[in-house]
Length: 392
Image (cartoon, rainbow, N blue to C red; front, side, top):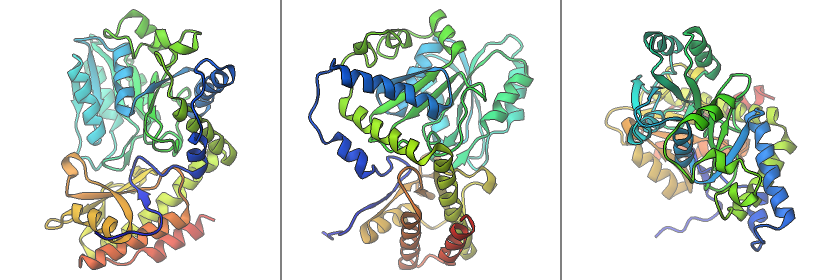
């Protein structure tokens, strides 16, 4: 077995690398669940998350991953037999739709080629055609990490409004919260879903839902049978209800430190850093494409995510070999293709606690991998360096 020295470069699109400060925050004993200082810290974390969601709405936390937060959102507002509209841009939009269907909802899909963003006009047309207003909610994934595509949330909100439709607007911000601009209240999102392990730089295990007034009213009036996921129970003043029992103390210690780090850097500066590093990555991929064997999955680079870059490979190349070789030879962990892109793409995550050195090192190791595998490419390191230099 090959021994890999040095620190692993974790460039997967979640979990992202956990900063040393966050790791150290967890390096302590458990405390009494009702200890006043801990309860105050836990409540402050939930309050501070509002600023990251850019909302005045209540944020609920779960001992769960993003899929658990999906189910929490659905269970509170969608009852069996009710209809949801899901414009799909990749694996995760499709899977949120499958979850809704498994929970008894009727699902109306708007498919696409997994290389393009949602077309707001298609959303508007589907809603206009729903003259009986049977569609209870529109489910949108802001950034689908499988395809590296980000959707225009504000434009989809405008499409719902243009159709004059009362559907709730539910958005998955798992891969965008803390990496790209997200404005829950300004964009009039009724429910936002997120998780801890990407832009929030915290280990996997926390899922979040932020619920606006219309969503809370829908939950009071209906939804599915639920207990653990129930917002009304978690909204009570008693601290032991906030997690439906024992809270995940060490994850909360970690989240507190991560939020502090984000606030120290400044949210706008966090977004600018992610954009800068994403543009450097895309500049490199554009050069790699000159070899005729690799290309950016997003047909329009303007819709490419600032969280993760998905790179398609040509027929006859197994992207899984690129992923495994990069890890085994250079200790760089990339993401693999998911769903329709299994074996046909690999992914470079650039979210959370990363900087220029991390990205340039990872890009260099990808190029070394391509060379080892004799996959034609044109070096993109100079282009990446130039992109970083021009960004200041």
